[in-house]
Image 1 (cartoon, rainbow, N blue to C red):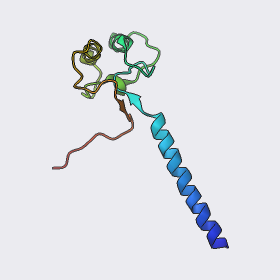
Image 2: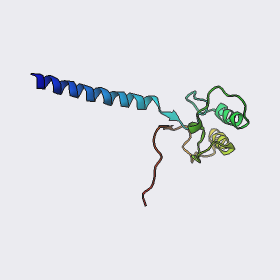
Image 3: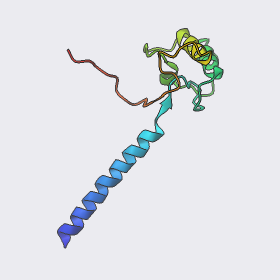
Image 4: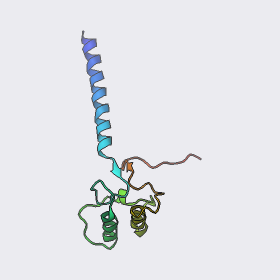
Length: 110
């Protein structure tokens, strides 16, 4: 009887850990280009990037979401890519798609 209870308890612990990791992953998904963290990509995101680059105050800033070209730094080209996306001039950087900001970058093997 003790073994059955121990097995059931172990299974429940594993299931609870799995469900916590799945829900945490869903919570941390960000939208590429959503620099102001309002869950949509608008011209305000390009403006927030420009304000940040000009050392002006911004309420909230997600640098990983703002770095749409994945260059490793937020610069004026990121604001330009967002503007081009909003003007429907192409989307090579997958702007407005969800991504996990805590995912490790892909490292190719030799």
